Image 1 (spheres, rainbow, N blue to C red):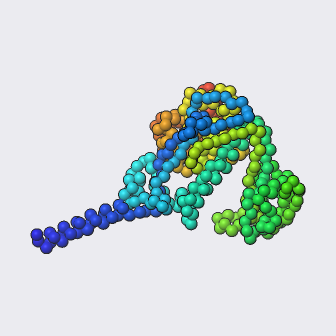
Image 2: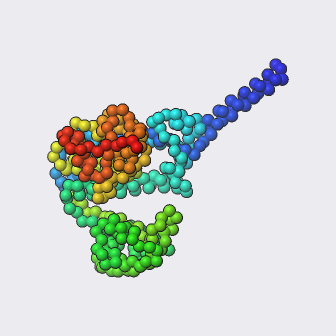
Image 3: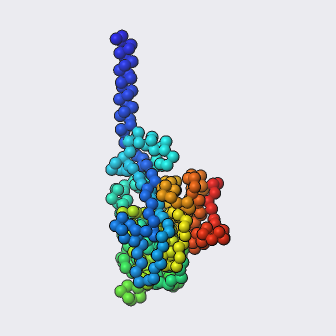
Length: 352
């Protein structure tokens, strides 16, 4: 073999070795893929009702109100290799996103999992509250101190378990009332909080400070509050290890359906997604494209889409899937009824 041929052969081998090594090289990206869907009117993996209601008449339903999920590959502990990332970029049903989209910097996978679990629990409580409000079922609401941040104005003055009843003398019924009042203040303003501790009413005056979060311009007191609901009957939602807040809308619809005669979805296979506030406002989610694909694969013909996700969803809508715009629980119930009866307006998603 000539020296030139030998040099060429060695160069080809080196290129091949580098190419193979490159495909095995971990990259800081995560692959988002269509995940399982579950019927909120059906049963969980243990054969138990996914949503179980006790202490109130429940109406059986064989319809479909499926929530959708996204699965992922990659992450800090098991990063994608370059070859897998390239495959994902070429697959229309897969999204390759930066690792920090799912795993914020300086947070472990365990911390992310814990946050997702907490978000799911909060979502369930919000869904229950929204459903009962939709049905006109009254229940007490308390604004509770969840935690107090050290070194900030509330430290040493408020405690977890305190119930906030008024801000600057104005009665507060919901957490939204408190945040709305705080939004009108600036750093350095004084705030007098009325609260209950062990059944005794007390007051404290705090001076707000600038938020330590560089992305926020709102003043803070250093206290984390939450709405606490006392429902008149028991609602248990059991979805296994699914986390995050994006099933809230579908939980609310299922509770409304179970507590009213007849079938909300009827014979229409409905799936959807969206966060929910206790007052029934629907919020956007991530992975909308993958969730639509999951819904269509499961057999859905209608997909309930948060209003803020509508434009992106319309651009990637799978064939055979009708997108219905969802902004509030009340309007979504009305839209589903309009689909079943053929009467009334059905809000849709349109590409910009």
